[in-house]
Image (tube, rainbow, N blue to C red; front, top):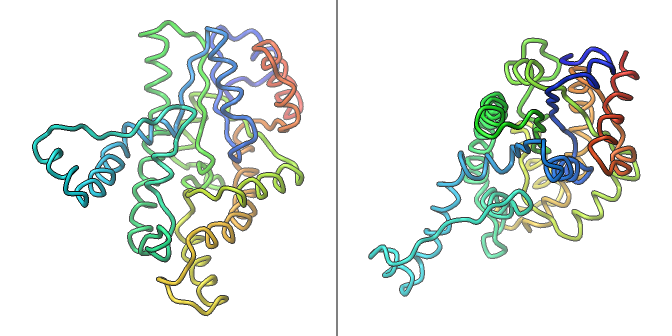
Length: 286
């Protein structure tokens, strides 16, 4: 590990961490807290995906819809209006909306082939954004003078790496540059995430083999065709299965770094608290 002992972590003049785990357990909370205290650079993988790698696709989807409206079409064709997404660290809706949900077009669904195409675009973008971490570590130091760096990863990072492969190119590079920190949730956390998702289902990235198997099972179980699928019903049905699919992948990723509990994260209020949290996790690993 980058910091082999708790003391090495505490004494490090430059602290570099990468947070991973299910969305909603505290990655962005910790990142925002550290950034707001002034000497931490916050790198959001999701923001990088949505701006650098998927921004043109997202904007083109907006324009495609606008071109269906004669009034807006005329303005677009004459370059009289400008359409772009307004992604922020705290609002990633344009990215998730672009990913979409498969199923009945009258319910806002996409053809499954188009849905899978967008999923693949996201996979490639996520890998590239993760590998940009090293560039942003250097940039944060050289351009802004930030000594400390936190990488706030996407909840789907475990889907785009092979944590059982000791030569996985993405994890190998990330582990050289930062301490990987898994925020592990309890069964209660998982149940709350499922309840939250059920209230407001949103698109997300899934591993292709898992997604195809889930899609085929859903069609067979409900005896329906692609165009009859309720998009929200499918993603609700898939979500709990996705969390179960991801759990062992996160756990194996944790062997590349350290683990902290979501309940511990909830108690962190200051960078000093965070230092203690990570030091304790390193001690446990040792």
